[in-house]
Amino acid sequence: MSKTLQQSPELAASRAPDWWMDAWRMAYCDEAAARVPVAGLPLHGAKGAARLQTQTNLQSSYLDVEPSVSDADALAKELFADPATAMVSLDYLSEHSRALALLRKVKDFHRLERRHASRALTDTSRPYEEWLAGRPTKRRKRLRALDRGMPGAIAASFTVHARADDALLEAIFALEAKGWKGRGGTAISQNRADLVFYTELARAAEREGALRIITIRDGAQLVAFEYDVLLQGRLLSAKVGYDEEYAALQPGSWLALRTICWACAEPDIRLIDMLGNSAHISENKARFGDLREDLWRVRLYRPGPRGTLLYACHTARQRLSGLKARLRRAR
Image 1: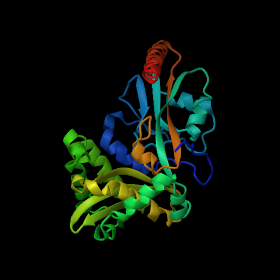
Image 2: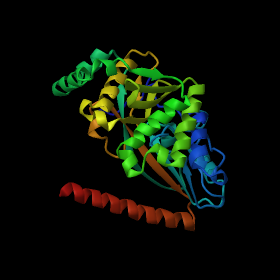
Image 3: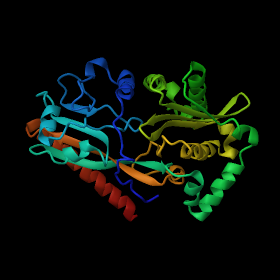
Image 4: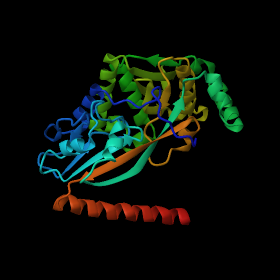
């Protein structure tokens, strides 16, 4: 999966809707730290804090400025309207976002930027068999074998849910906690903020007609799930999970493959975004992905003593990280 997503009106990334950001703010942002959005960019930071940052993570990485914003320097001044602010960090900006393009034009402010994540995308704008035919030969054979390997009764249970009733949400959260995430203490149900975010996001997405929770079952037993949200042509895969008792059947991979098949037949889905990637896309996601979209962090620093000091510290840290990475590759 070496292709980078090329910007086009059909595949352009969209800004996360207000209801998505409201769910994020409710879960992760202390009320006192919430700021008024700037040009459509949701920010948070304690009152009088020297640092502000965007309210985003890999599960809410669709930030951009409002379409009417076109003046880079005016945007920067608005971001630093509070005289206490020395640095603003804007994280997980798409390489195609208007925000990134504008921030690169800002004058009179120190700026650091780096690519710090990539997301794998699956092109579902074509028939499924055409998508499958585009896989390398060995991978295509393995995917066909994976599809055939699922018992018929479980395969037939494939269901797309557009409603987030309590029983369904409790079941998928419990299944995630039953596996390795639960053993590591990182399951949604083990973190109150995460539980609030994914519950509120599901409720809001249901109200907007955007929720798509996809499941397979063995009788009454939930075997695997995908928690997806549809955002202007992109199906965002916010969470996935499977029952490790069925690991031999690779239910998570099977469900991902069958979801692609379903999405290829849905005219309102052009891409699946697997989200949750770091700097390197995992092999499991790469085998389903066609395209890569890079996400950037941009930090602006006020050209005064505090901002300049922060800029110098972060510049040194970024250079040291780059040196360590080069040394690791050279080994």
